Length: 413
Image (cartoon, rainbow, N blue to C red; front, side, top):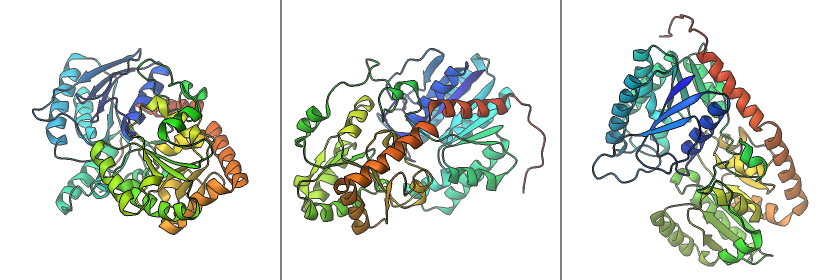
């Protein structure tokens, strides 16, 4: 098939949805399809045979876009819609594949072109408004709920990234085919040689070379010091306040332990550095800044423990799939956002409290027998359930629904 894909994100930037889009495109191409991607005017090029990228025009005064809902997305999405409609008029497409709020554009284009629509559901749009504290307006939330229900009911197939979203889709319309494809970023051939790799090639197309000792030295950490590593964005929903509060307790028991935070923009880093100082742990916290994705596997191997301290949400963090492949023990809060993938066999799960999370970290860095066993079972889970073959099989299943004529059915009230 020749697929028109609509992605209202910077492509490519190291953020969750962009990683997911990259892997989806890669799998589609490996299955023999071609993709025309309509996306924002920001991001790095990632050339792939079978992919053409069409960037919308940049509205005046907008030079970057943050994660989550924002007013800056309104003019960007209008520009995106113009570009998508222009592509639809010029190309011949067999399907439309939409991400996030791009579904509002994609469902209209699919109807005009009389081709099937695939909704790639990374999160519930109404829930995003709450998670990012974008608005408290019931009317706005109702509009997004209506849009989400309409698109799900009029899509040929919906891809979801976690079981909770699968439940959401089935609750709206159980007759819509729904394929669960976890956002396992290591689900690509590159990652088999580089455990924990995101599978995104760097500018040279090869992973960053180096040793864990040299990385520790660059961070001011000695070979024998325990390193607790967090990777990802510094958005409030990630629970970094919980992590800092927990590390106060960790530092009291293990003065040699270091918390390394890889991610965040300069303003976020400055704010978190100030919070660490106010808690009296400034010397124990190392800020690595945003790292190229090809460096992350080395960071994961360097660490003694990997942490995901989320307090809220239901979507599984993308980092969890990287963590599973790393061979390093995971400490995560015992919440649905993690337990959809992790269990007590594959991670050290804790209450979402500073004391509970600290206890989990201390176990990961102090009990080598438990830590090694948990990490080994996590790696086995990644190698079996989240292999690239499984990822391709589920992508093939979703595409098969696009090739089957839609059966007329009565829409629920």
